[in-house]
Length: 372
Image (tube, rainbow, N blue to C red; front, side, top):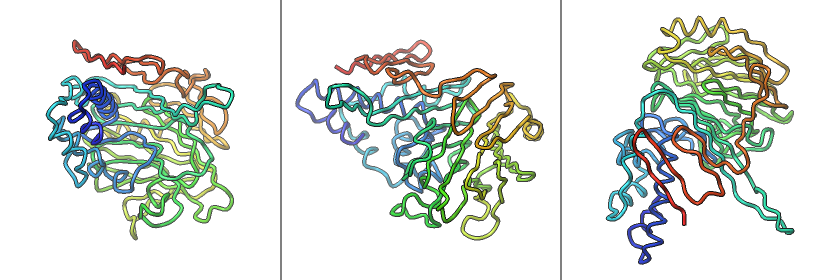
């Protein structure tokens, strides 16, 4: 963002300046869709420890605060100052409206990849990731769908549930007990072994198969009790409420709520090389009171499989996910990835990789980004 801001403002070529502005619009659109109340809460290919524990500390927080009045400033100031002192670039009002949009539910799907052309000239992908985001006025749930399951990980932040700036929940596979970013993956950032994470709307299933040589032998959830308005941990369920948003978390191997040491009242630890976690989000609008939500989740028809789960979700859908095979919804296979040529698909836009422009619509407003 800092580099693009300088190009937009200082480039002697008007074409280059305009293209830099277009790319900034596209990046800010991604932030608007994947942020919750001023916090960048989407899945990430590389994340530092501070950012995954609080959206207040993310490098993008200052940008969102300055442009949209959401979130907060922190010590990451390079891009924020570069945009603030820019004479030419003016972010479209439409983007701030999308960032603050409290109406209904947003189901966002994105595909990102790096083109790779073989020696024979055949075009493919060197890597690809499919991101999903489900956002309401009360919570946001985001995931990198089925990303390189079983492979060695580094600093990837695969999924996150967000109820507030500090009220964030996620599961990872630590490789040490440090929170030093020089030791990624560490206690909270990244995964030693990447899971299979699968999201369908406000429900997410994440399955781990750790190698026999794993010396810690557990996965764990970040569950910061002090950040919630209410929380309940009992009978292999962890429930939390922030405002009118709810979360329920459970694991096939069970878990222990840590109440002493460096992770006291922040960690749900679950031992087992093979383990499946289930996250169900809720809100007062659909699920009644917090007590009603707990009662409904406890009553779910839930069957743990050898490497997955079958559950009837709160939305009345029968969901089945295993380590191998497709996501099944009501016995019908569903694709967790977009078609190869599809880049972004949500209620604001649908854009293909082959297209040279992107039309973004919000209510009566429209923004056209032309990449040539």
